[in-house]
Length: 64
Image (cartoon, rainbow, N blue to C red; front, side, top):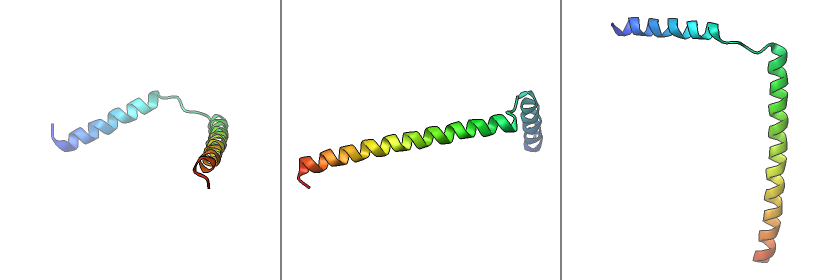
């Protein structure tokens, strides 16, 4: 099989597999995105808080 036929075969198979997939609706995708953004924001606040506390502790230990 020449390289061109291999590439064509790959795209045919990829298209066939994508046809079997189920896709989220626009609403489901928007809701999932909101959840991800909320979790990322909460985790950022958590990490920032831990960073602040540790920097205060380290500053006190080092006498700054």
